[in-house]
Image (tube, rainbow, N blue to C red; front, side, top):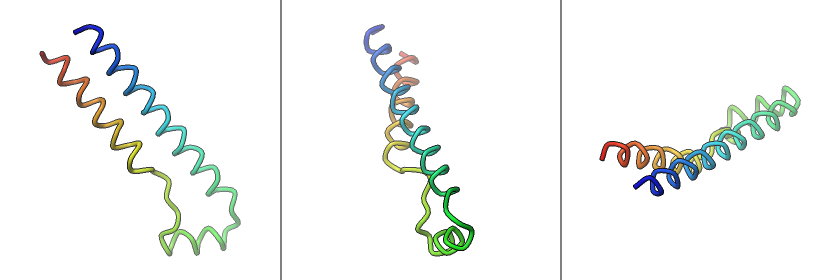
Amino acid sequence: MIALKTILFFFALGVSVSAIEEFVEKTIANLKKDKDEYDVLYTTGFITTIDFWSTFIAILLWTAFYLVNQL
């Protein structure tokens, strides 16, 4: 049981760090655009900062870790 908890913890931690790193990279990349280009991209919805799948997988892994700890 301890091995399962450890594996879940480190996978969840790794995916969370990856999701945060991607968020920061996208935010920095968006801030490097000039004001007019940023305004057009933002209003048309082409700027995304949060990647759905990496965040979703991180949430699932942390939820699994929580549930395993309740056993």
